[in-house]
Amino acid sequence: AIRMTQSPSSFSASTGDRVTITCRASQGISSYLAWYQQKPGKAPKLLIYAASTLQSGVPSRFSGSGSGTDFTLTISCLQSEDFATYYCQQYYSYPRTFGQGTKLEIK
Amino acid sequence: EVQLVESGGGLVQPGGSLRLSCAASGFTFSSYSMNWVRQAPGKGLEWVSYISSSSSTIYYADSVKGRFTISRDNAKNSLYLQMNSLRAEDTAVYYCAREEWMSSAFDIWGQGTMVTVSS
Image 1 (cartoon, each protein chain N blue to C red):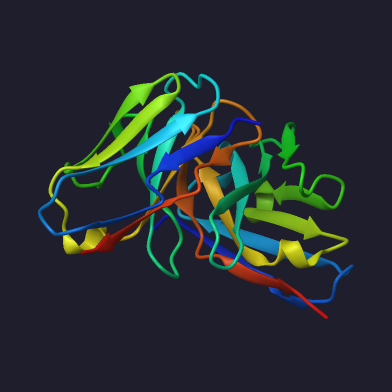
Image 2 (spheres, rainbow over the protein chains, first blue to last red; image 1 turned 45 degrees about the vertical axis):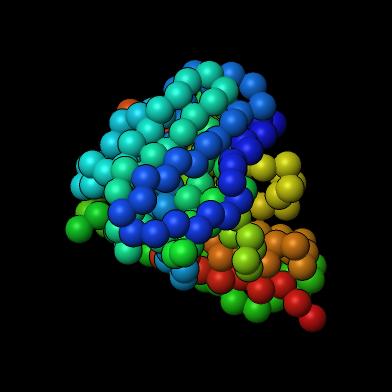
């Protein structure tokens, strides 16, 4: 199984900050990577697929990049509603695997 | 409105069985592959199982292989997960998720149903 490793596991930031979350795959996955946002008690929400394609309706302050094994999710100007947990997921092969999550907290 | 609604969760004893359902609406269910994903309390997301639109292809996580069975009824717009020989470590919120047809990312999720395995 492909292992997905996110860093950091948690992070404190302020509204207006620019933040970057990293996801590394244990083997090459081309661009078959998605990013999800999850708020407490809610289902995950798809933000980005194909490593860099913004899902319809997602604010443009979210962006993704990378291919192969190294990927990043960037939030250009944090808003209060962005404080949540973020997961990367590979869909290159089965079993599908998720990163362990990055919890973004208010400083 | 595109929607997935899970049901069937609850408290079950170790070794018991439970059948989860996921009702789809607002889209052509028969055209989409579907997945089950679970999340143990306070933990991350774990993919459980996949079924193609025609049920011709099915995959399972190693942790549930031989115990769980995924199925669907396209006439009823419904997805199922039959869970047998349940263990404490199966305790989780179970989500059904639609696989976006072009990318294979999970673009629509249900609200989840809680399964608790405990004596």
